[in-house]
Length: 192
Image 1 (tube, rainbow, N blue to C red):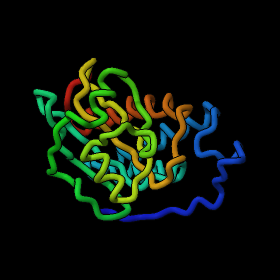
Image 2 (cartoon, rainbow, N blue to C red):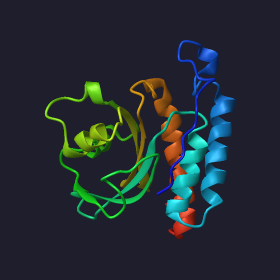
Image 3 (cartoon, rainbow, N blue to C red):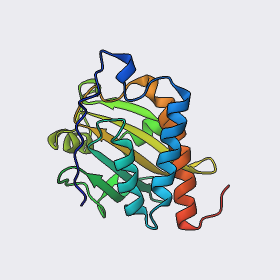
């Protein structure tokens, strides 16, 4: 497990000029290019996940990035890779049912979704509870597709409940496309 921590001394949510994601399209394009380069610099999915996490930590207070792959029945998510700044009970090899997770919301929405612990309805899912117990307070769930089918989910989590905003979601949708493309390239799957 890789462990790293970045200080965000220049990040002040009250000052839009220091926001991790401004509406500056050039900046977003630059971050997406850096993310793609980071992923391509590795030859394995776990290495790519760590490189992506390190790249994104320059712009968001991310504590964990995980890749969850759907089984063919879409009833379970298998965790294939995790980069985290601490220990986790939901590491690679763990399989969880999709029922009671954000996957069903993601499938309905068809795009990236933002979740905050304090906004989740009761009863909260088991995975949500584990993430909370491990200190995570907000996460963005990004669909990864092959064609129109969601094959995997990338989860970017933070200990800061205000780490992400709904205005960040279009960026994460674009990031999902970059990650899909790079992972397909790594895996050798044909593009659809």
